[in-house]
Image 1: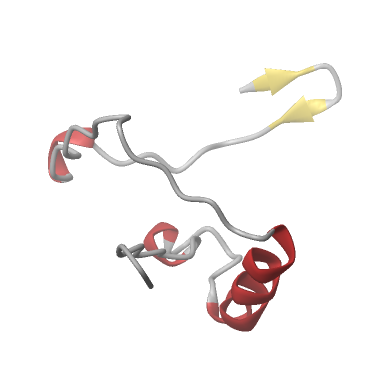
Image 2: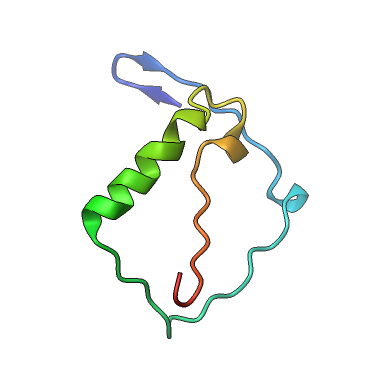
Length: 68
């Protein structure tokens, strides 16, 4: 991609190499105290990748279960 002051190259992968994401319904929801969410993310965010070479490691997985 070229822009006014230079250019940049993006590393791309073929989308066919990844599984199709499941369909989600929008019937459910999660309610959390914002400070508790921020605390939970801060406890694990140190372990995420920030170099772009490991895109699967650039996020935080959250698993919500009823009552927990």
